[in-house]
Amino acid sequence: MATTNRPDTAGELLSLAIGDLVRQIQDDVPRALADEPDAVHRLRTSVRRLRNVLAAFRRYLDRDAAAALRSRLKEWGDVLGQARDLEVRARQAAAAADAAGLDDKPRSALVDPLWAAHLHAHDDAVRWTRSEHSRDLDRLLAEWATLPRLGTRAGQPAKKAARRVAHRQAVRTLRTAPRLADPDAAHELRKAARRLRHTCDAITREPVGLLGKGTKDLGSVGRRIQSVLGDHRDALLLAGHVRDHARAYAHDSRVYDGVVDLCQGLALAALADLPAALADLERRARD
Image (cartoon, rainbow, N blue to C red):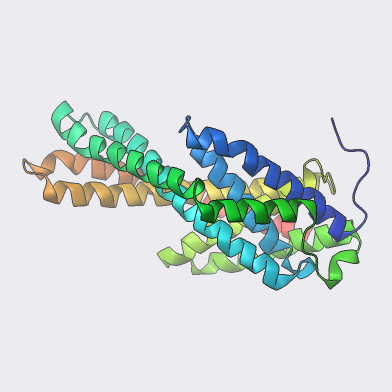
């Protein structure tokens, strides 16, 4: 059911958004622990959403308290990320091996260790999520969901704060783009676009439900940039992994040349939409 009473202040906006994001994290945990398909990804994304909202709205929060919570969430997200990244790499390696026509033996030699590593990383994530450290974080999240640690600016009008934060995140994303020749800068642009997306989602979706199409479109462009650079990064990392595997392969390493070429082609193809996406973001940020 849609929310009818919209937040009047930035503090009320954050109370709604943070409470909803904490509930989403809590809902995602059991499925992630069971290693249901994409469940670790959903939990990791929920953790990132909360981290990004805390970062984007830090001017309206108690900065030290928000930074401390973000640090705790990052630790959890990093553990989840190990399991998720290996799951993705195993799937992508299998797909690339099949597309390149790799025979069963070299295919298994490439893909099977990745799945084994994923299972090990998932066990690590389960142990962390069931640890006393995680329980402390659960209690902290419950406190924030009930009563966020707000700052002195939390009394400002909600719509005004939301517009400022969304615009600031769009500008931040654009400022990262000129340094794309640096691979690390491309990764920073991806993270900035992801924060833009998560910020706009939190503002426009229920239970907050503020602003309208313009902000939703900003979030959509952020998602578009994130997706393009994510596909690019995944393909490059997979190509590097396959090259490393080929060097250690006891038989003919050349059997993997087709897989490496395919991955490099996917990385280049992924960037084709980036200039248009950045131009779209620049245009929307001016509106």
